[in-house]
Length: 374
Image (cartoon, rainbow, N blue to C red; front, side, top):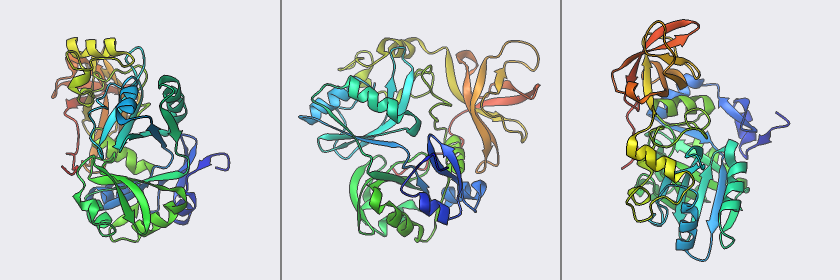
């Protein structure tokens, strides 16, 4: 652990009895004494506090909002220019083959763009932005801020007790709040499928703010283990597992994230890396699709399990990319890719586990309905 990077909440995790593991170069809590199963269920019923300070936080600024937005649109297939002040969107960095280099969140704060990228990709993402944006755009990595997430149906009441403005925020709103005397940037978003908030706070204030939140009724610390099972039940992609440099957004089921203005016939059609390949997948459909997979019985099908059309013989037609036990649904759940002609909901396929092919059904995602604040 001594060679790993530490977030501003490292000492707090240790004091709470967290089991620390290496993750994306950081020492991160995988679970607390409550255990992964109970942490998962607590987030679904109350409010869970997550440390996501390992993720990259970046501010893009320039001579005007239009200059910043149009420059960023050269790197992502999203409508950035049309983003209203105080609103956030999900985004993707694509490569020249139409693959996904990273997924991210970006928010408009006045004339600046606040970008949050994955921890494992942030070095490459910083280099991509610095190389791909014009000189008039300043790329500032925020190394003096922590990022924490408060997730679950109890999150709004907990946060509103500290700043009433939190209750008025809609899903994907971004605003400044004062929580326990600390000025923060908050978005009503998260990666659990539940209502909740992601909170960017000065690193020096992070420990005190986290302790203030944990002292609230119904709030408990949650580790990476439950974060993974929560996002899997919610049908949300994990970069490096469910999406990567070889996956195009259409195959990944992320077409919804590409607004019409950037598609064929749109006012600002294309203009991003791999646009020809991505727009072709829109027009003619992809060869494979990301689907939900529900194994029969109790045995989980984990990442790497090959998927077959029949119980015997034949070549694989896909593979599991994320899988495990879903505490909310009380059974195994998985996601993966199958050939497009096998992606219809209700299709029975077979996953090969330890040399034995077991039945698995193609099902609609998510496994647990989203509980976002609309």
